[in-house]
Amino acid sequence: MNDDKGLVLIIEDDPQTRRFLKSSLSHQGWRIIEAEDGKTGLDKVKNEHPDLVILDLGLPDMDGLSVTKKLRHLSELPILILSARSQEQNKIMALDAGADDYLTKPFGSGELNSRLQALLRRVSKSLNNSEIFETGQLKVDRVLRKVHIAGNEVRITPIEYRLLSILIRHAGLVVTHRELLKEVWSIEHINDQHYLRIYMGQLRHKLEVNPARPKYLLTEIGVGYRLAIL
Ligand code: CA
Image (tube, rainbow, N blue to C red; front, side, top):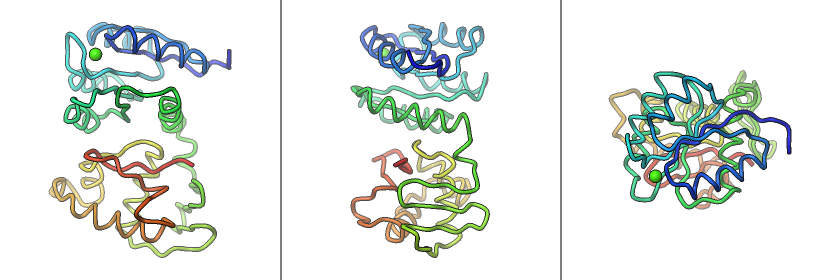
């Protein structure tokens, strides 16, 4: 057993997925509580105060979107959603309603691990809020607003910087198109996805060795973008 990382609530009706999550997570030092439906899950959040929630979108009693909204009403705790491929639209809505990231079933323990690490960073806020952000060869001074790649300063525009800094705030986690458009351009532009394609393309040209195969600024098809933690 590793040291205690905290308490995870798994809200999932499928016993096999629950068993898999339970064994991977307890191996890494998490304590686990479980709920088979949305109502029980919400009760356990209120009564047992978990540090993190893993939420299946396809529950027998409530859809995952309503559970996400109710959870957000109760607390700021990180929510990782589990979705099947058929739940694409629900997944995006749950992310926009405040879920922090997602895993598409089936997933492996490696993927589960890296998502949880990113969520923990968000919780501890240590790295994502510090003055200097670093991942791989990318270094961003958030006080001086300077960006370096492999030691060389890169000139980026104010809009590119805003885009990058939102991704840094959520480093390792997906940020939806809507959220990026809303934060960088305002609510009137939440459907203008071409803005994102243009500016993300420019950023990739400045930061990536091969912009067509990005290492840092990853596309989550149909959902949004993710800044990789390397
Ligand atoms: Ca299910």
